[in-house]
Image 1: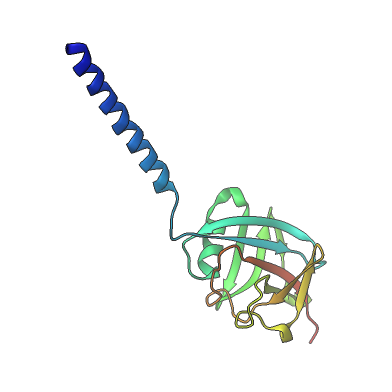
Image 2 (image 1 turned 120 degrees about the vertical axis):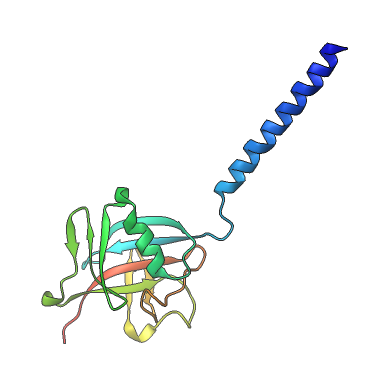
Length: 156
């Protein structure tokens, strides 16, 4: 009889342990998080780096802050008044207003409310991205969206 009680008790402990470990795995999945891609592009429309990011941020500014906060990404952004002035990746600075090289924001979202065709496009690896209608503080994060931070040479 003792063996039967001990077996049942051991089985109960195993079931509880398994339930706790499954619950812990589910906690790693944040139901509020969205996955998006942030691509850095140079002045010749070459991809510099691409990051897939899981974020709870509602706007691109928060996602970019998270991206820069991770030292493994080796990226930082110089942001002024809600606009990216330059970005630094692997110790290389991209963007220089003195040379008319400006940072522009583009998206792969096919959403007329979020893009501004009049502001232009950028083509990277044969894919066209449209200028965003908003700066990083107002550009919403959408699931599986691609956001391109590109250097554009603009002459005035």
